Length: 224
Ligand code: IYR
Image 1 (cartoon, protein in one colour):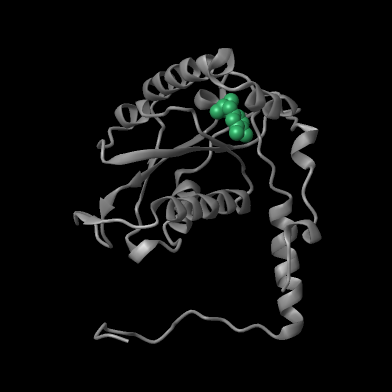
Image 2: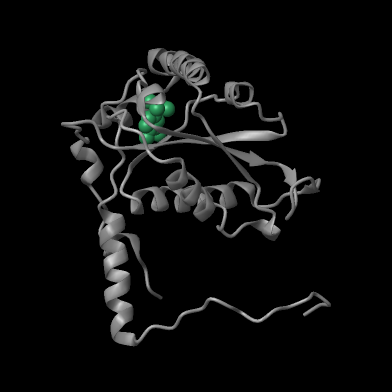
């Protein structure tokens, strides 16, 4: 290796073999209970919970460790209203013909439409931005690498952390979503990547049966 400075690995915890299987099984069982939810209560969530979950997201691996992400937590009702209006306008165009027949057919079993009330009602609304340039420290201006992969993993961590906290979540990707830069006051060098919605389910919340269909281990795995 090169002349980089190295430090001892800290924080690695080894578990007894018999504990490994129960730990991974418990983790899996917990993650498999996660559902994408679109019906939200307006019951508030503590800021500290959201901050902790974003801290988890920020620990994700990233290209050259440049951490090419920024999380905007939208709490201001005026901004959220503007965001909802812009997102719903895009969605109306999408559902009214911009989307292909094949795409609309794929979405039919989810029952989604252009109405996105959760953008105003859910207590947690996080706009995730992907940075084209940056570095391991804020203020740097180096090229970033594997941006989509890195931000995708961070979003996965964020969803898992919010789920672990006992909240339900939704990934929402209005298309196009350039309007998010203005609403969130982010520079044009950042690409809006995803909206992550979180909170408590509304009373009587439902999920589409379609979402319960999961491929089996055999179907998603090949061992060679
Ligand atoms: N963005 C639209 C449509 C949509 C697309 C996919 I692919 C989904 O899995 C769900 C929805 C919307 O949010 O309604």
